[in-house]
Image 1: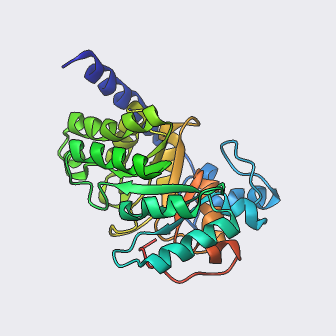
Image 2 (image 1 turned 90 degrees about the vertical axis):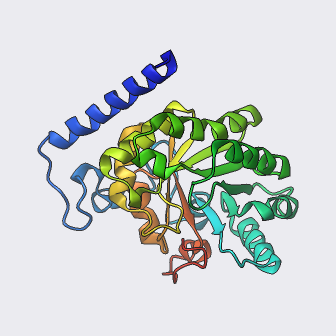
Length: 289
């Protein structure tokens, strides 16, 4: 085992022990979300409503512009048309969403449509299964950056993680984070939490942190379930304050967004962004988000 792998193993062991130690402390759990009271969105909602959000981003979820700045306005369905992509970009510019999140084939189109606006272009790599090899993800990342992407959401090799092949997972993540760092592009690592045990979620987040990712992300929106407040709270505890946490999948209204922010999310992926900003309930988005 080389020195880097030894350091990685130590990091995972330390983080896992910290999470386990925290879980051994006697804590009460809220009835609404079954997470520890110190992470419970209900307990923190009054703070959020008053104008505070965790982790140093000072949003006021009652103000539509600030809420919009937390959202990746998402359209990842396979049959998305150019007209729908144009509408997505127009809405993103109008409401001030953080990014549009689209499949790689639309990156160049969106970069052109959003030129001169503060809205970024986010795309996905190894999506939605994560089951391509690291070299392919590396090329996907480079091509997306060339086309104008400023944020990359990559899916880890879930099967390798569940097989205990942590070196393969580490290399898989680094294949994306390295070109992102070189180009000043944000990287987000999708762990697809619905497939993982809590121990595997801890390991995945630790690997993402060791590989220099900017964010960890809960879900693709195409798995068996999406973001939960418990997963967001766990991921935040593991990565600490220096990384972002993105909640994606099933966030369809303003209350859902507030709950994710209170649990520790600093970005939310949603196809119902316009309805969230308007403070109304949204039907399930066409992308599975």
